[in-house]
Length: 178
Image (tube, rainbow, N blue to C red; front, side):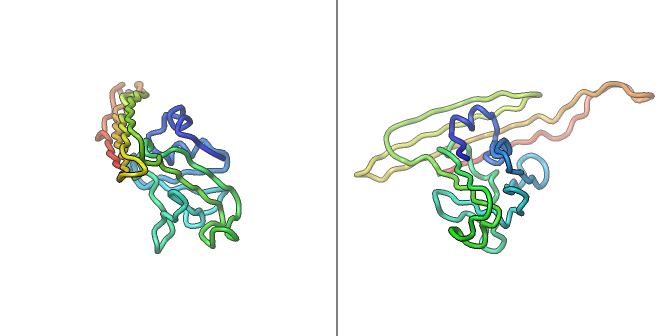
């Protein structure tokens, strides 16, 4: 499977992990609330058995093999390539479940883009991507993303409990990829 940057915008997912949850055979494991560690599992294998690559290089923790996908700004990603099933003959024992290769936007040229997404109950995501340089100079690329989710929910009356609003702390994450 290949998930392009256009697919990422269409899905409206604030993180790469949440966008990958739309791919058949993929399961996203979130530890904690919004902004917590997000890892991906392919076809029932654990996250330690799913190899995550960034531009073809292993990105997982050296001890556990796990990689937190929530720390990568989606604006820095050009596409994500997924290989399901045992790929250990090509990639080693960390790829028993499959391989997720995150291809970042190559730096170079003069370009900039920005986006704003608004969702349900005040959820919003704002991002900026810029690139400069060329083959003869040092090329740079930066992607910044800020995601905010409001945590206030109205609930109806039930039995002797009156209607009201449940309010918790708001959640906000900021990711920068250079």
